[in-house]
Length: 189
Image (tube, rainbow, N blue to C red):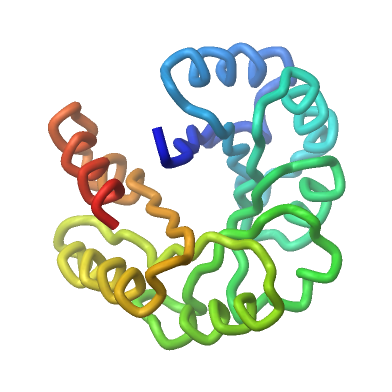
């Protein structure tokens, strides 16, 4: 298929490396092609580098998902392929990162801030994915779909990232029907 499917291990910071490898192999067998290591607030991920290197030794693409800039830098330096996320708030760490960043708005629904950072990356000819952020139902879901459409129309050639977990997990609607509908949007956009 033409898209990358990121499968997040949300509690990776609390799991031993062998357990993460077992979960990752299962996700890969189910169709994922990127393992996303979820970092947790107020939880040290002391073995982050070890986990990234272990996954990479199995020829698995890896992303590091953290609100902590140091974890993003550590993950990238260990060989992660992607980092989640970069906005105007932490743009300065890009000089320390080799991984492909997922770009997000500086605050919820701020499409202008996402467009500004996209323009910076396009001007610098740096690889990235743009994520306008999918919001759960009754928290801006319809408007968030429009943001994806707007970004695609304005930037027809860029790569877009859609974190469907904000819908399926936060709305408690993880089903094959909802996932098929979301993959339909991914495919069209």
